[in-house]
Image 1 (cartoon, rainbow, N blue to C red):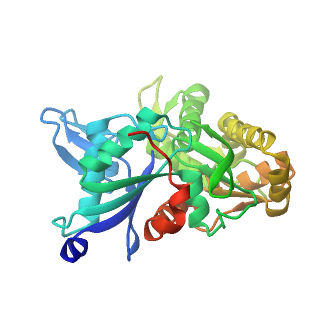
Image 2 (image 1 turned 90 degrees about the vertical axis):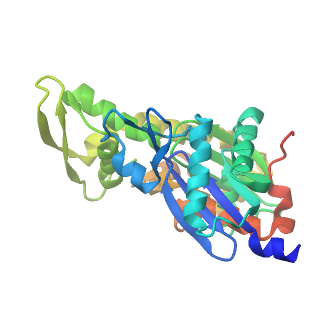
Length: 341
C-alpha cells in the first residue's frame, strides 16, 4: 500500500471553459493552459492541446480542427474533454506511470446531475481512482483564505469564461446562489458583434479577447484608452485596421456586464437577512478572470451600495482552493458536492 501511495499522485483541477489549471499535491498550481484541443479531422487524433492548440486556433487548414470541449462551464464534447484532461495531466506528471489516486475538480454551482456525471466519468477515464467535485465559488472562497465553515456569510462572485457563479457561503454550504451562463466569453462575443455591426469588420476571437483585456471596462476610467484593431472588411474583403476607444468598448459590452450585475443583485435579494448583515460588513469578493475587467468592482459597488474587492490573483483562486481541499479532505469534506451514483 505504501508503495502504491508513493507511486500515485493526488491532483486538483479547475476545469474551466477558457483555461484549465492543474494543482499537484505538494507542488501547488503547476499548469495553466487554454481549454482547447487540436485534432486531425480524419483520424480524430490529438495534434496539440493547451497553449499549442491555442496558437493554432482560427489559423488552421482543412485537415486540422480546434475544439473547445467545454461550453458554459460544462462538457460539450466528451471525447475531446477526456483527451484534454489526460493530455494536461500528462504534461503535469512527466512520469505518467504513476497513477492518480484522488482528484478534486471545481465545477459551476448550477450544473445538473447529468453534467456532474459527465465530469466524473471523464476524470475516471483519465485514470483517477477517487473523484470529488466542488462548486467553483466554494473553491474560490477556500483559495482566497475565507473561513467557509464559520457561521457567517461570505459572498463570492466567480466570473469565469463560460459561467458567472455567485454564492453566499456559510457553515460550509451555499446559503443562496445564482449561476448564469454569461461571463468572459459573452463579453468577448459582444466585442466581435460590435465590430461586425458598426464597422463591417470581421475580427478573430483572439483579437476580441485582447481588446477586452487591454481596454474593456465596466466603469468610466480616469484615463480613457485607445487600441488599434486589425480585421477583414466584410464589404471589400480586404484587411483593414482602425482605432477604438475604451468608452466605445464599454458601450459594446454593457449588456453582458449588466446581466452579471443583475445576477449579483438577485442573489442578494434571496439572501437571508442575518447573512445580508454579514455581507454589509465583509463586502463582496470578486474572483475569476472576469474580475480583472477594469472598473467592474466599482460598478457592482455602485449598484449594490456594498464594498467590493478583487481577490488576490483571481485567475488561480479556484485552482488554489481545489488544491487546499485536496490536501485537507477531512477538514473540507462538507464543502464537497453530493452526487448521485
